[in-house]
Image (cartoon, rainbow, N blue to C red; front, side, top):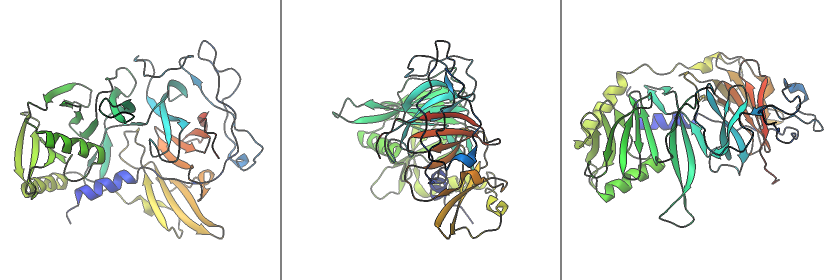
Amino acid sequence: MRRGIVILLVALLLLSGCTVHRKLPPVAPPFSTNQNGEQDGELTVHTDWSKLDDGDKLLPSVGSRWYDEYTGQLIVRDDYGPLIPYAGLRLMDDWPAITGCLYGLMTTDGLVVTDAVYSSVTRPEYYIGAKRASHPLLVLTMGVQSDDVDGYVRGYRAVAAGDGSWCTDFCYRGMRAIESGLLLFEDDRISYMSPAGVILRSWTMASLKLTQEEMDSIYMGLEWGEGWFGMWYGDYFCLGFTDEANNDVSVIRLSTGRKVIMDRNDFWDALIQASDDDQSDMEDFAANLPPGDYSEINYLWDNISDDSMPALIAASQYDAGGMLDLFFLIDGTPLPELTRRTGSWYYSVRPVGGFIEVLDLKTASYYDIVTMDCAFRIYLGYDAD
């Protein structure tokens, strides 16, 4: 049976995170560092999960800083190693990111490289059939004051190497990815970037003969991802419909840098064929779970990873006290230390760069997905009840 590509891709993206709930004890204030970037005090610990229900126990901060001073931007250098995002400041429930937190960058050793200034940090994702893939790059999103509307902050993106060895300016209003590269959209041009970060082609809106109405449609598609905008196969990227009857679509042909008009059905048939020629659908890992009466099962992807398979499985289950959120490795190994009672808006658990991010109301903790040792923990500065 042919796949409904748009619905499938949206569904897979929505499954990349899951909110879970339980109250943890309060946490010590943020760590401090000396001039050499070393921690003041012995703060690195291996968490004893059995103590998490003791309200009088303080979980210490874990980690340190690369730079002693506040660092509001990525300082490019080639000795960080792989960088992963960490939540560093909680704002509210779901703004400006789905976790409600601003993010910074840290090394896999728990050294802060940038403070929490980004509304999101992701990798450019695409799908081969139903399987998720990504490029070894970081997409950093930051709010920039609009010149057009007073008080309006628009999200702009920069693209950086996964190890912080280079970074573009925050000039992109949006991004779309496929196996062959990324399309990056600025206010007045579109650029085609290779997976290695090399700009292969760049076109102004004028050279593509795009009308103001088409430009507005592009920005709407970048903002909401609706309709046909962003569908991409091979050499062709769809900008959207060209007529009120929605019979034709406007398409960029990347090899020539020209805009062409295609019949909607012809474009859809080619898109379906390209998908059918790709890899088979993803394996059903739910079969690995221990026997149980699960009311819901979700796969959790690590969006800062090369692995095309989900990193965790989240499952909901009722007991005498109500709903529980359970977590398992992809092979079905239970993670009972992550079990949460459903009920608090601020709790979330997700895989990030080989770690498990656990967000409480006032703290963010990062646990090694294999050993469950805490590599990093920080106070989120949230004072509301």
